[in-house]
Image 1 (spheres, rainbow, N blue to C red):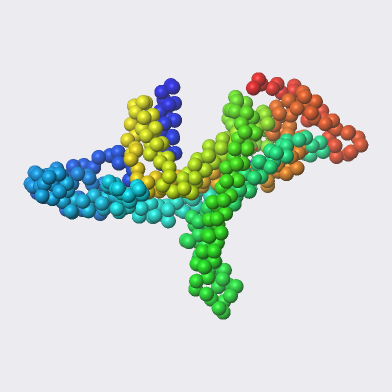
Image 2 (image 1 turned 30 degrees about the vertical axis):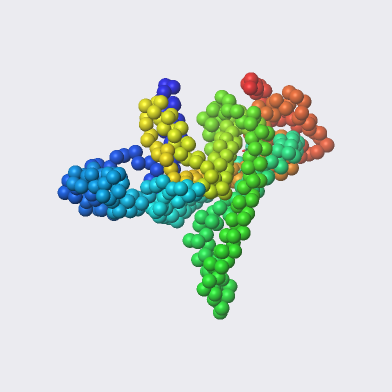
Length: 438
Ligand code: HEM
């Protein structure tokens, strides 16, 4: 059982690491291309090799060295030096790393062939799947709103407010939220801008100014927008990282998963039926998933972002691949990932990873913003004034309220003096919920 779980985990990590990278970079050549009979060319390139390359298939790098004819002429002391010119250029064309005496290690690769595939992935595949992810999330939320409607407080407002988040907690949340939203908007602008924003701006310009159309309006406006966006993106990233640390420190202990959360999740959090409210402490199972998604994905986005801010400084992916290879072998599931990535390949991976994980987090956060605002009556004030309605708290976080009650932290209703006020016992369960040990 343990082995199965470990295997599943390793597969998930490996799969997660490669989502969206497609075949953009050739770091992972775990499958050895089928051999080609090169006796007719004395081991040099054949028509089949050329055809394979044109079909985008991999071709063994040892072309020219395995033949019989002229074998010694390609030896180190042979007439053609270490390798013939055509062989040398072929290897350069295939992105092989050579020795360099220059301090800049990327100069060891003369032709960065995979760069074109990376560029195509960035230009077409990433925007396409990003649109699916973000558009899909909006569609799901819209469907949820139509089918379920707004989640209301079943018992109505109680008129008693209790403190949910302190000032510093709200400060941490809003620093995180505003920085993330700015990063998301500027990041998406950089990703989609050339394709969508330029024609969009041209269209708006033509509508507003039909008599004096400037054919370069979209491009010029986008240039300004992207320079400003890039500056904001690079600098606001630090606020995001600081707030990530802040919320991690503040909310770590409260987000340790418990059985109560498993039961909460098993009942869908009561989200899909009007009268079901599974037990929950201060944070329910769904919120804990959000918390860990923000921490883990946010940290991963930050790490890849730092490597993009300081290009060619880090070898994050080759180090990760080496660890995954060791883990894979330990459980009898060799992954064969390349651990000798060139500096440019490292950058390509960092860029793709940064975008893919950001898009996943943006989609999750869209759902969070919906639930924290229009989707659930009474939720927003938790992060607004820091106080929530008692009936809301009872319905969504009953164990937390029970604990506060025990500690005498729940204000008593003033009763008859205010007709809106519902006295405390009104919604009190027959048997007060027992608070499971932490
Ligand atoms: C306009 C945007 C946002 C609104 C209206 C909003 C609203 C809220 C509310 C009302 C809560 C408290 C829920 C409760 O009392 O149980 C909350 C908590 C939280 N928010 Fe936001 N939020 C926004 C943006 C963000 C962003 C962008 C992030 C992260 C990148 C984020 C991360 C969190 C986390 C980790 C929590 C604690 C866990 C939870 O309660 O779900 N929020 N948010």
